[in-house]
Image (cartoon, rainbow over all chains, first blue to last red; front, side, top):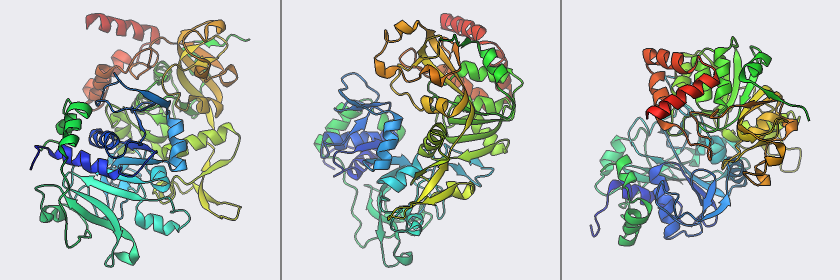
Length: 259
Length: 286
């Protein structure tokens, strides 16, 4: 290890990589780690990305988490404008997922039966509309068989099996780009052994120090596992410097995700 | 121009049990809390609440006012899950219609345009249509033939919103960064009530903000309630931010019956004037 980085840095960087090549669209990172990632992508390899302050302003420059001082406002982005953007497709969101399955179906609504849930969560928020309209990725900070499940209790964000069932017209804007957990990074591929050519979750890389056995044991379904699984890349010195001094000087990422 | 100034109690007197009531704001932001508390003190019940939900939904659920909630989410923002709403759902004491955030906007917009529905892709493939089988799809009559969700109009009997400035005629000004969907709630409703931080002369409406902040016109309102700090404890930027300490107290009380009784008796049984005095005493003590 040439530089001394943390799990939070690896996850933030993996979120940043999900935005690589996105160009001039709105990116909406939900939560601390995805936000560090989005700002890092904008500050380095994807400078054209558009980001809000989390309220209603588009911010042209990259400032520290939670800071408004020094922000350069480049536009107004209230929720109504965001919904319009969602439906126009010029957006990529990283949402959370209380549960996710191998087709990328996501649940943030409730655990148990919807009619009388064991645990009521947020509600579906924008997940149905996001997933059917533009690229969606997920960040799951607590990788276990409780979050990576065989079947989600309530489909909030639409996965590849549901999208395929809608047919090619309705599903033409559907894309689950990436899933980042605290153990590994995943994407979705149409593999021979997966059902009916449907895209299912593939292990894309293992975070430094995480074993394949660990990920398999903590995943409630079978993953597509390539013969050669790379290690999730760590930050360069420049990237780490940006995280530590510009984007997250207070270390909020590490507070949220120790290790 | 008619003078539409009324008090919280007058608003509640115009509402009836069983009504469908839309509440503006978003999560724990710019909620008409003095009007919500007036409902708590009333004999109203069996209400259907339509909301981008926050403590408005939670408090009305916890005080037995709600039959059904129509929502895209219910959250306190800085505290992700709304404890009173969770309890009501988990105990099965309320009915629910769960919608995607954008579907909720579309339902209000359809009602405000007097259309039976508006089409969207949002909802397709999700479980929303499974648990609400009355939600139908519609096929595009054009060459594409695309199948879309037909979000039915959400007609409101009444709408409650809170804004920064208003005049006595019922024109409203939103100085905050996001007007949310307050205008749609008003347009979708038969009776429209707006509380405000400050009442000003019509000629002063542009003193605090540009033309674009005059989002609510008097043809969209039936009553104006002067309620300084009326959104407390939710945020009302730029006039004041969320009272995070108070919100934590609310959320802590919501999961403890004894604490909840104390919170309820202290804060939910008094009129807005007394509520403001009590807040001011607390401010002075801090």
